Image (cartoon, rainbow, N blue to C red; front, side, top):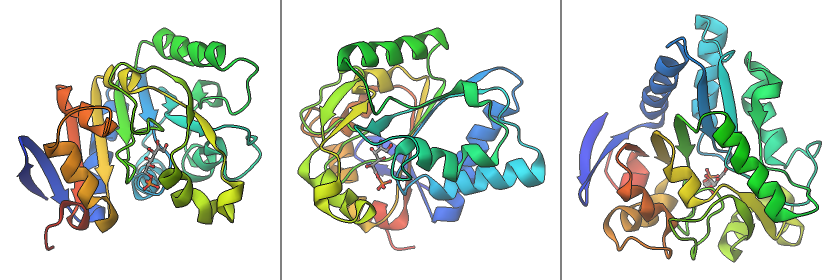
Length: 249
Ligand code: F6R
């Protein structure tokens, strides 16, 4: 694990195993602290090795999720929880089914709703009722999105219904078996919602993320790169693999 500077921020750079183990240590410290813990969780490919490591620690080392309340960042609109492409299903498949989390304490934004504003406000209210997010995990999109806060999302945005950017839909096309099957909308926590977490951990893996990570860390802060707003938060850990950091291993 190396600590390097990109712009004014210190970032952790390591191979995938070391990164995940370091981030898993943070989660483990919280979970073993004895208090109720509110985790903000992400889907996509980035967190999968982390989730695998957390499952291993649960199975082999007794790491318990009994005191965890979770809030996922986002969900596609219009696909049911029984559809394996939904983020609800993805979370159960890759983490929740394998640990002792209380299903009642799992929250993922709704994919179906009558009134988007009401549904979004309810999600925000649940986060507040849980006492706010202690620890928020993020990946980053190639266009700089966090959650599904696409370019144009400013730092004050709250949970809401959003249009998905073309690039985001193209990235999801293989999973959906073609661009025409990728939902056009989603429900996402806002950048402002994310920034209220006590601790934020962003993981980026792969050369495809290098350009946007550098932009987020060194370019202008603004809605053109929603991830850039993280630089205004006091407690963000940036965890990059060598490829995403543009450093030879
Ligand atoms: C997923 C999410 C997205 C992803 C981002 C990166 O819940 O909020 O912002 O983190 O699109 O996706 P992957 O990890 O698949 O590269």
